[in-house]
Length: 182
Image (cartoon, rainbow, N blue to C red; front, side, top):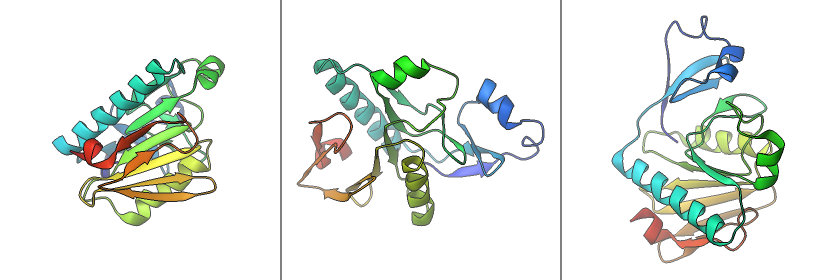
């Protein structure tokens, strides 16, 4: 997750319907406004790429199907978001194909938290995903060396010296926290 800024004078000219038809790069639709995702650091990008590769290799090696995305737009009950990393199951891929914007949250989502992100905003976004079809959210906090995994029923905290594992989606996947954040 990276900080977002309102794009001035574009919300009036760019409706939700416009966004659904042609989602602009690095933009989210939040509270009726077009927001630009910014603030990504090299560390953020590295962790994002590493996690996307790890999830992708795991699902390929296990022949689970589905697709792993980075920054792909999805619709929640309230907004249109772009999770840092997301996994779409083969069942949902068959149901929806690959529309411009997935009409629900991805089943598995990871947000890499930047030092400028506010805790309330981070957890509100995670809850928004969980209320919109997501079954598991990973909040990756590189500076704290923590990974918080949230599901509908449980919350887990993993740190250096431990392995973080999926709880619902991509069963059996795990990676050492230190390895992912290194």
